Image 1 (cartoon, rainbow, N blue to C red):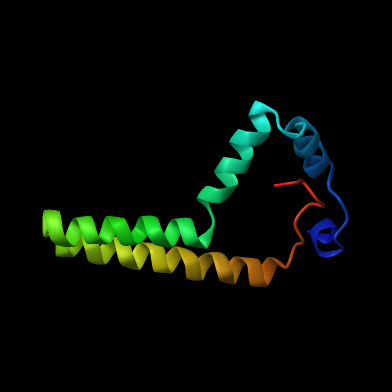
Image 2: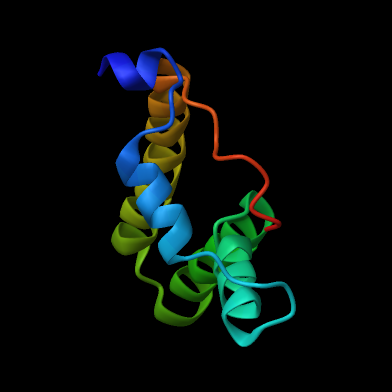
Length: 96
């Protein structure tokens, strides 16, 4: 815990960064960059909207629509809370 609070690089972090380090414009780089965009707010929001519309208009499954919406919103709140309390900076420039 002290390593995280003092913002020192952990051996595990270094190992993982070296394990997944890839050169730019390689197939692996393109895959990792694509995965990164899947977590962006715009992508998640648009995908969630499509799912809610599908559940509302096509399936008429209001219970699942409500649970899905609460789950997405709750996940966003939980993620923000964790990031705010951990306050750990992201690894230096990974080009993604």
